Image (tube, rainbow, N blue to C red; front, side):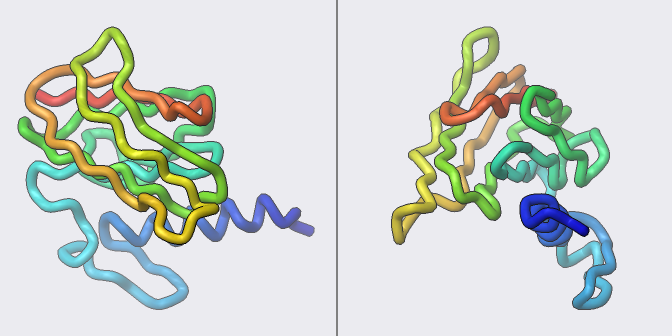
Amino acid sequence: MFRTGTLAVVSLLALMSEGCGSITTSRGSIPAAQTQCTTAQVQIGVADGFLVGLCGCAEADGTVYPAGTPLTCNANTTNSTVFFHYIGTKLRHQIAATQGGTFFVASALSDPSTTDYLRVHAVTLTSGTYNFLDLYSTLQGQIIVP
């Protein structure tokens, strides 16, 4: 029997995978043209306990990076707009650049205990290496823009 937490993570992964590529879900097939990133776009999911590369990276779409395993995203194009989607979260999150990489503006606090909390943070990145972390967890990663 699944524990409630395991079932929630499996359900969340199924929902997140709808954002990129041609997939089949319980709601039927979703054409790739309707779900993929547009040119110069990267989408990263931020969840409680893991990050997921949704699309726009050279790495496989849907790759999950649990806490303690840094996400690596080699962006497909220069001047990429990166969307950090706070998905299915119950905990606070805030993405910020770290030392050792190129700076970008941190997101506002995403606090699901409030009625109008942040659900997505977008930044446009030029060529460079961008290290980031979640200020409220051990989630971290690196985006490399050509």
